[in-house]
Image (cartoon, rainbow, N blue to C red; front, side, top):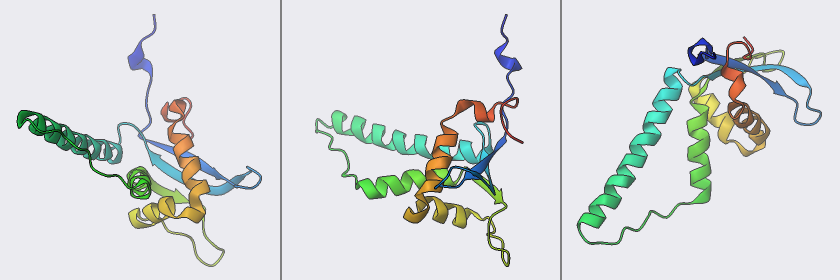
Length: 143
């Protein structure tokens, strides 16, 4: 019989960034917060709070006999909000920079990287990585 508790989930997984032209592995490693990591939980709580505010506004409009009109959403602002949230799940990186100066990780640099259009290839790899469930399973995650 399968015991779901036997599956261990990593707190952090390591993604190797691939070159955008030829898909070869680079030396750049990005450390990503897993499902139970504080960074992930904080991001999920923020999203849930925003959803609760919208639901409360809808319910309040109904209670007052009014029609609820959703907010106008700018697609670019929505894209940036999503990428900023994902950037908070980047908890570090290594192996990137120039011979003279490494590209040090910080939360601000992670957000800048994820939202900068010329680095969309990195953001795409990060999003694809997050969409692969097995990467955070201890037997499948790269340490």
